[in-house]
Image (cartoon, rainbow, N blue to C red; front, side, top):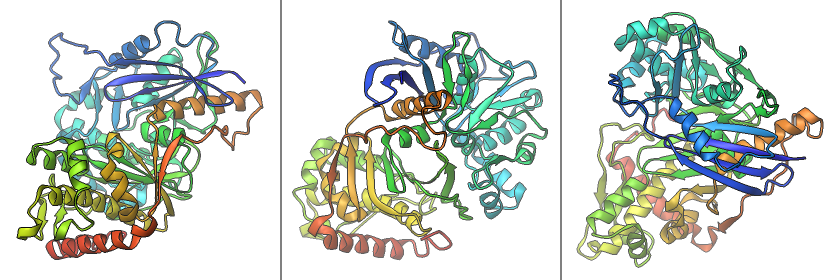
Length: 488
């Protein structure tokens, strides 16, 4: 059918993959960091204030050397939790607001109250606002930069803005349901914008992009290159991995995230579940934890080793870590909602006070915290038959040995690849095939599943569940009712 490309404009770099549209085979790759721009005396000095031109410069550098020669379609994925505010002429009102901007925390609390509480937001858009979401950033702008807020006439997300630029800034502005579902003013349940919530945050109405279908094209460049709908990073990664109903994905960063593919949007009045849409027409309920690999790094530093050394130590211990239980709430916690708490280590006895047992307790504590997040989804009827582990920490032998029994599912560790960019390329192949009539707009191209290693719970499942029960007992004793009202 042809050659397609997918680009992933993340928070710090652009990655491009060029793929065979029929087989998904990666033919070429490109990479470039986002350059620093500015230095002109601008008052915007926060790392969350970013000039979008840096995304275009990075894209151009990543595509150097004729990388895109012969490409017929491009899919764009980009960092979520961004806000690109434009005036009536399409010019930037201010730098883009990106990431988990803690400046907007008070604004998030304010706008939650303005609509009537957490349950009202969950019912309206499937997510309770946090400082990451565009709706909270808008509220912050109205409070701190009222002149800029007054000039805003149009809102985009990073992916929307990049697509618009690639198409030559046409009159038509588009986005997809995945990106829209992360803004805080689009409902995954109804599939529609909530302009009243934009007005609640900003004080006036603005122009919002047209939400197009997963297999639709956003348009063609002047050179005739098809640009697909595009989507957010999480949605593109899920598409690139090829996950479906019954699959969950755990991303092991400093903090953790757990998402699964589900057939319907989930309204969670506690705010624990964020009800996002995916890039295919399904839904991606997401649960976040504040503590994942940061727990391992902290323990490794305490023991004077690195992550590999910590893993080796943990494997010298036994399940249950000789009675040591670590509640891994080192930065407070989001699941359960304990923002001001600290971590807890219990079960100290003379025989348990050895480095290997503390190492084991760190791995078990981190994975039990993620199991709590999985249980939030399971408690709402989400099927979890296998769990994909992403991130460098998934390569640690202790994670691979302990996770199957504690998470109670088959563990899949995909080989390292740019799955977000691959997902964007797969979407481009879908849009290209739909445009040519060779693919149904209701069925994406069948690319091979990601090459992976698989780890089964096996005979250790009962032992792992006993360890988990011990962890839950300590959690309930230390933080009684932590999950009351949540979906577990």
